[in-house]
Length: 156
Image (cartoon, rainbow, N blue to C red):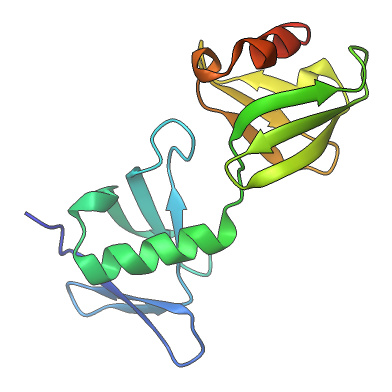
């Protein structure tokens, strides 16, 4: 059964408007993932312009189609976490080093300032911060090809 405790719509300026079941209305709200890496489709909070939570959805899939679509559009416009699919090469095994990588958003390079910029989220999941502050995700170390794992092992 869909969660209908709130609805969302866009105002004439393109901002999200929260409509609560009890008639409350909040303009300029922002959806936020509670667990953006570990469980991106679970735990969606709706935050008002003052930063207070005014709505919650346990699972984005449980929301009505229109509300779900608005939340997904808003999250996609703000979130940018490319997923590394392959490490092509590294300039050096000493830091800083330049990495040539293939991501789900295309080929790019990142500069790793130090090994501390590689954060292990789980046994098989990593988050890598480059020198420009962009976060790159390695969703599953085991899914990487052998060459990529070998290069990455040098930094772990």
